[in-house]
Length: 328
Ligand code: CO
Ligand code: ZN
Image 1 (tube, rainbow, N blue to C red):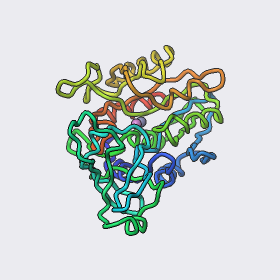
Image 2 (cartoon, rainbow, N blue to C red; image 1 turned 180 degrees about the vertical axis):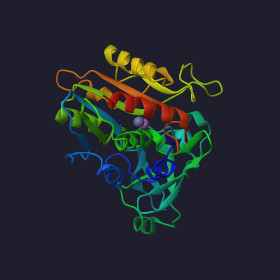
Image 3 (tube, helix red, strand yellow; image 1 turned 90 degrees about the vertical axis):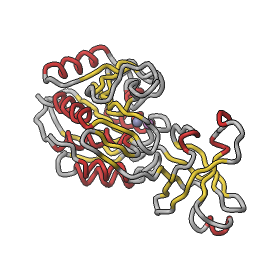
């Protein structure tokens, strides 16, 4: 298996923040529609692909949405104030280029700040290159959402791009679906909406599916950067099996199942404990009377920036693990 750069580049570059998942859903739908038995788009916008089988219902979930910035106010000079859609650190926003879905671009800057520890989102604004409010209003509206504008880059071992949280998870499910392996499971591949604003699509889709077990695929942080946090996860050390994050304690049977499958298939893996943040399984495991759930994580540096860094080998090991779960 090789890394499919063309597909990942396309997924990363698609502008689809939370609540505006139409564009990315269309790309994914086109990629998978010939390989699954049924596709349903539910009322919230989740894309639910079903590969019919006789066994237990397993739900895989990757979120389609990405973080962004929503315009809240346009001042007389045409500068835009904004609110976060998902988790944003004001310090990484300074000087960043952003783009709206119709191609309008801007740059983020801040009011004069004496002490940068005081930097808050409400000190920041977006400059779209206009002279006044009237001109700005011809280009953007209150409620429009922009995302980072950066270019996809890749070398032999790494990819660097925006929104790999969680387009890399979408990539992995698409690639797994295309492998067409026989399974004992009744499989639901769910591309969820609005994860970044509170695991919302995962909540409704799991209620609908009622899975017997669930695995989410998402990025996780690492502890391998200079003076980084004390965290065991490293890029290049394989796929990461989540043990705990802020939204979930992985069901012990699922943790055992994932590590046993990894060992049997010579898949390089590491355990992950994430002290902040969560993902779709956090909502799914609380569905109805509970769903044994786990997460396959892709170690990632600089999450929620325009330049998230991922090791391609870790992606391929994650794909091998997903396929090994599905296989009879
Ligand atoms: Co995220
Ligand atoms: Zn994510």
